Length: 225
Image 1 (tube, rainbow, N blue to C red):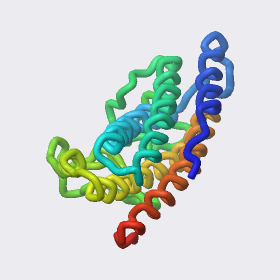
Image 2: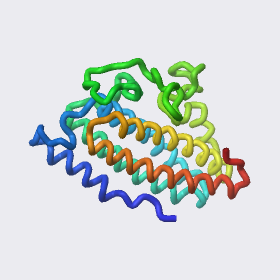
Image 3: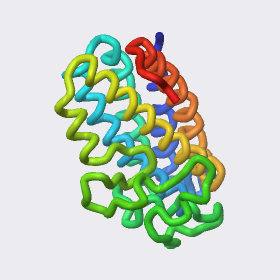
Image 4: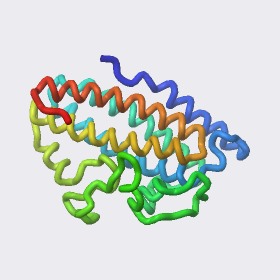
């Protein structure tokens, strides 16, 4: 299976942002909405965990997951570069002070708009808070859709071989599904064509990854819902 031939597109998206630095009227990136900014901040953080999980897979997994882990590591690192590059061009910080608040904002929301973290997510198709009973800082809390909890990351860190492959495939599938929901919200509610293009690309690639990860689980005799 061939994974993620996307470096050229990500590079072009980054170049478009850089070229627009001297052109405030450039419709592709200016002015960004609060949704665009929040998405760029939160998706880059979401990707950070995928990079960590993939690094563990290269070290502790078998050949069944190493290729896809390497592809995720390369592809999402490039996307992080594009997302954080846009934030720099937009004059915005890399971290979102209100994680996931943008998910229920209107397309016309200005960058100063705010909402409480995770508010409204349970009302959106395919979305729910990671763990409604967990509190920030607890071992069972994940700050964004699909992200692994600290407890799950410890389990992954301690796993080896087949046990690692299975847990990695399960956690990365969930991670990708959360990312897809974020991508869809960015496309529906954002203002930047650059953001929409990257989000659409992520949806396609993450579904491809999920199909492969599902095959890995089935090869190990693990039931897939």
